[in-house]
Length: 183
Image (cartoon, rainbow, N blue to C red; front, side, top):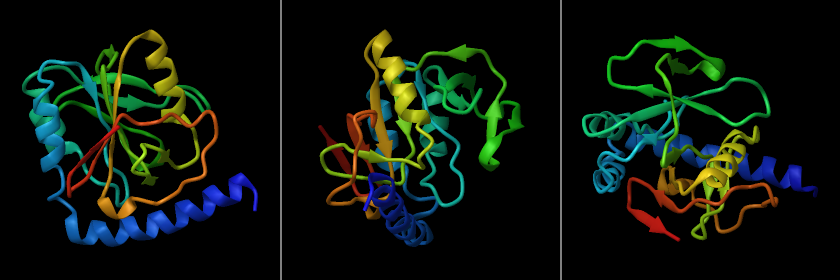
């Protein structure tokens, strides 16, 4: 089996586990993320708008926005790093790719990045959707200075092993509804 086929199979299994977890935890899973972000009040951070059955960071982002700048990603073109624009609760949003919305605020650089994912390991490996947006983004951000990459997922998305490539950016921390893993 090729690496691409291994990743496809790992994604399918993790997405099935995520869908089941979402039924149980939807709307009640951001407590640990709020606790972690509270320790970094005022530090520029960026998150994401949940799509489909992703774990939703919005409650934690709303709380963080009361204490410092928060951004959300925008996709400018395929195969490029993400750009982050300032966001606050109630901000104007525009329709974007993949059925999400994007803010229209000024461009910002996060020092903390809350990253969506399909699956993760206890060693900090992340499997995304396959577009490489977050891998390229983390590479660019880390070239310019430190950035704390926090994967946010349901604990059911954990895998013992994930196929990885040299371009797959590792995470510094994983936060789930069940707790926090640091590396």
